[in-house]
Length: 140
Image (cartoon, rainbow, N blue to C red):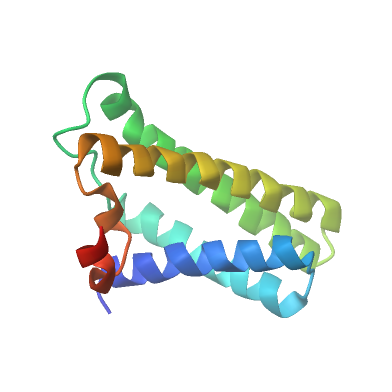
């Protein structure tokens, strides 16, 4: 599997896990362990290999300068959520802290998605193609 393919799998898999945990209000250990593994691999991959996406030529000004920092911030929020959920699974932190970290991650992810939707629909720079499987590209 390529780095891009693995990142896409982790991107959408982590989102689905967060939604499953929040929607169902589930603290099921299997879901949380899977989230911890997915998140840790994803953050580790970013730390070792760097950011996969680039701002693109159509993104200019403050948004272009902020782009890498916004993504680093998303990785930081994900890393904190992973650490707090791991801590709760190991009885080192409370389940409330882990739960709240998932809510913060979901809110941050919503703003992240809005930003990329804006890029894709306003700038027409194909931003959504970066993190979607190639089979979906004909619909974007």
